[in-house]
Length: 125
Image 1 (cartoon, rainbow, N blue to C red):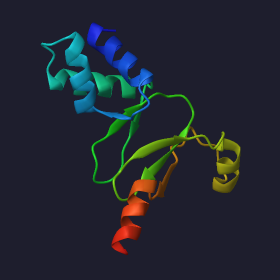
Image 2 (spheres, rainbow, N blue to C red; image 1 turned 60 degrees about the vertical axis):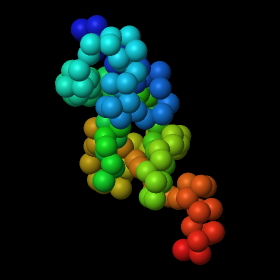
Image 3 (cartoon, rainbow, N blue to C red; image 1 turned 90 degrees about the horizontal axis):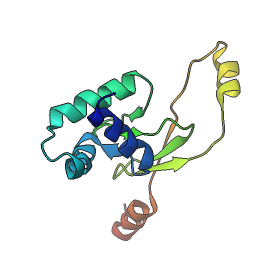
């Protein structure tokens, strides 16, 4: 593992903010000022392919990266804010409903965060 890969893994697993590649880049530059954005993307893809981190993709937004610890996400439909939610391990129920074994799942629940809900109520939408 390269020094960049190790530091990126550390940053992503320590963060609870679901960092984008650009955010990882900004943080990594504090330690390695000469790093380039392509290095961050390459290392994030390598870590994700190896199963060391999760990639969270939401339509219309930049991919975000997260620790692999079992948890699911709430995604605000309006602003895209991500929040962790622990629904427990649903593998058995999902396998029963699907009628076959599954390797993994990534559950994203869409909702309106409190700020967006309040803003929508103020505007009457």
